[in-house]
Length: 477
Picture 1 (cartoon, one colour):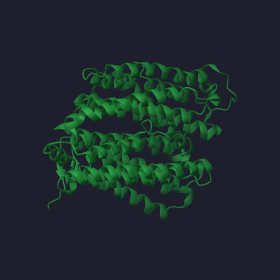
Picture 2 (picture 1 turned 90 degrees about the vertical axis):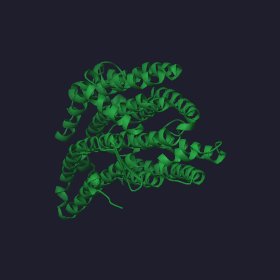
Picture 3 (picture 1 turned 30 degrees about the horizontal axis):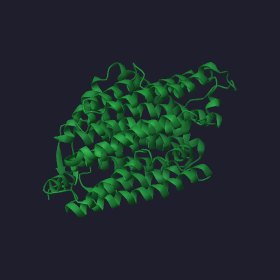
Picture 4 (picture 1 turned 120 degrees about the vertical axis):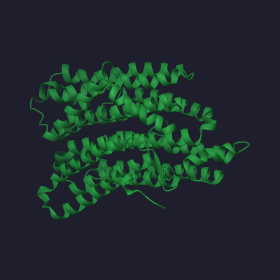
């Protein structure tokens, strides 16, 4: 079998980066190890730049086990952007909390590697191995603050529930393989097309897949782990988990369901529509009474998963485009918001919303970025979130899911309430402490980038729309 290793250069470079940081970390004095974060940031940025040359390559490797196409390249760029922004923002934060710098950033790189392989997985075995590579990295990252009981508690909960969901997903994959005799995703559809009727075991397998993926994307009723894990994990990990892990799960979910199970899409689309509606409603309503900003953002993230799921319900090119577009802009809005939370917490030791009183006076930049990012998540024009929700909702209107659009619009209006509640505290309440908030250079760069991109994509979404459309077409063709 001839293998063109140049097609795997993104993945190979990511592995080399992780191993390089590991070796350098052993040689550098402890007081200088925080610089490893900048090394990882630069390395990831270079890999991101190189990835643009992979657009237009649509090929399969290893007998269909690995796919290089515009769809996978788009999501790889999403993961690389997420990791780059998180490492840039977190470098001095990691130094302040006194954790092991090298290992922390290595785990982020390996989680990114798992996500990238997941987006290219054309085989059920590759899918599962990549998923576990990503998930195990997040288990370690979640419990990285060994002296923090909340971090350890979050890691244990995530490990137990994550292992359960992985078992559910693996059982579903095994049933699909048992009924079709193949692990290649594209061949599953061909085998199903040859069947006179749908075997009950295959139906059960698909249901288990929905449950397994539902956990990874924090869909209701599989979301019970999210609030505790988001609150207890180190804030950079929370940000990366909220965007990278969720986007990776959606990327592989769409490849599996849209490519392997198109023959009975009418059935699973109804199931996903119900999950989307439930997720949007529960996520937004439970976010309203939250007093801890990380828990509020956790429930907001659950609601965002519901919005993204509407693109899966569409089950067409427009829907996939909407998911890709919204997923990318969600990266900037979410990482921007969590970077504010990370810096506020590092300076004050608090994640309570009431303690954000007068933040606009203590740090106008933090208040402005958090407001812009939250309003973008709410879908307020002319910010990027409005364009993203427009693409998602327009993709399902013609499919007979107008009721789902109405629910999405109503809950988006409800989300404005709790998002603006935070803005009200920041701008209208008197500060409890007049001490200015110190924002490190790396975090400041992340804040400016995320805010600028969120505004730019709202005013001029065309560049991202073109890339998202290329990704969507590549999935089907």
